[in-house]
Length: 103
Image 1 (spheres, rainbow, N blue to C red):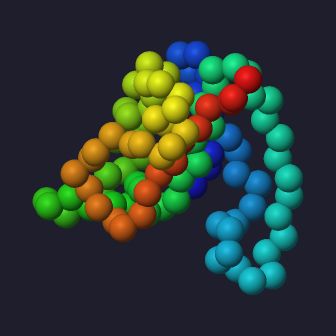
Image 2 (image 1 turned 180 degrees about the vertical axis):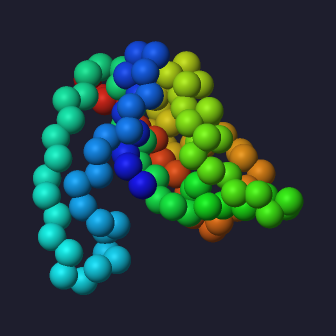
């Protein structure tokens, strides 16, 4: 799951540089850098978010995740940084977390 950068009106997927963390015991990981500017959001999530299913057995999916992101810019930083997330009606037992560039 590539991290997502919210910058202004843009939603950008950052390029994944390694396999899923912890999946392959001998995997090699590289560092990646992204310049964050005031007001940017970096969204890091697991497949448990996009693979969560609702009562109709529908996946939450990346499209729904991306639809939730623009309202984050209008929400107070404090609630986002504390892990608040809009309710989706889907459940996987996992959670998503969003935070902003603090400066």
